[in-house]
Length: 200
Image (tube, rainbow, N blue to C red):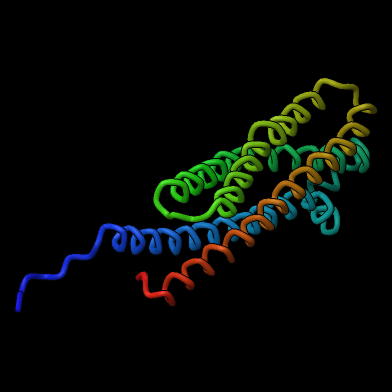
């Protein structure tokens, strides 16, 4: 009777590693979705800050409203909130792009997931790229154009582009959240099935 240690087959070892990678990827996706919800909440708070300030105006706001007129001061506050939101989203866009790219690479090379999971992660990466390279730059371009237009035109343009920018952002992030939730379920289901089958 041989006392030599039993060595697991390469296939068994790879499946065990892939199971761990899928679980880590699921945690990664869950953290990403949580960060998206946090960024959405911060964006809503930032963009609604002019209305919040107007509901309980400080002394400086009251004085500015008397000098320049409350409608103009309110619109300028909305413009300022839009610029702050754009800067915040510019940073988040790069972070999210890194999240999505790393997730796709890990799933492709180390997880042995199926084509559906890879397709979903690729779609999430594409949506992140759309946000970073198209939607956020358009928001920044809008902010710069507003400062060079006449005041009367600026107010109308601000309202229109503000609505377009926020709608595009929320739609893009909603798509990412939906895809992320689907991917999360598939990763956990695959990991659970592998555990039950005795591969790990």
